[in-house]
Length: 244
Image (tube, rainbow, N blue to C red; front, side, top):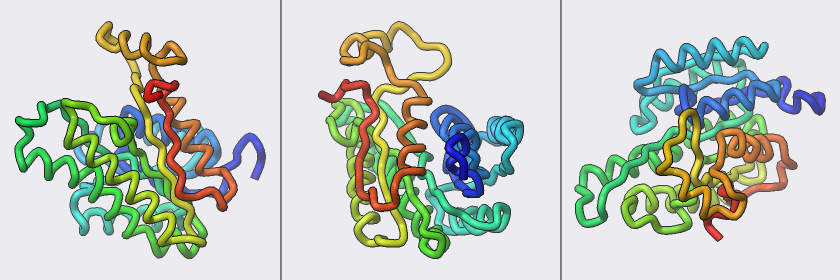
């Protein structure tokens, strides 16, 4: 292991890694030397492009279709990822859903769907990977949200699902120690690509005077992926101080 490639020889699985934040996390892990498998649900084209970009970095990379809401789909994907990469050391539970709905207008179906992806999904993936990661003294990094700490009036089902994921991360850390370290990264306002003026007021309210970028989240994930194994059960907020 070199300081330039601290994850050389490691294998990482990133759920929802085809685009946006998940893609950035996958690329950052690859730049650090890890072989990477990403999962996708409906973004096959984007997944293929991300895999090509990962391979261009010089690591082994794969994309697997997976619905994190479905236990059989999850188990098949985790098993295949381990087979393809000949092991699994790092799981990044990134796949998630986001939606804006007034609290009084959220339907039961919308409420349940949010939890299926944001809370049950990470549980199912982590459960499926538990035995593999335990044997390899691996790591889990869950992607939570500033919304799981601060209430957003028009995102009640999203906020509560992420708050539940934060507690799940703490519980996993306690239940699966000492073999597996489990931590959580909670991004604030993260932008990528073209940014509309609608986001500018968030930047103005942020002490660091800008919105977050994917690389900010990736740096936090890399910290937990490379930090001492003793660091577990932690929630790192990446928001430039927006939540203060």
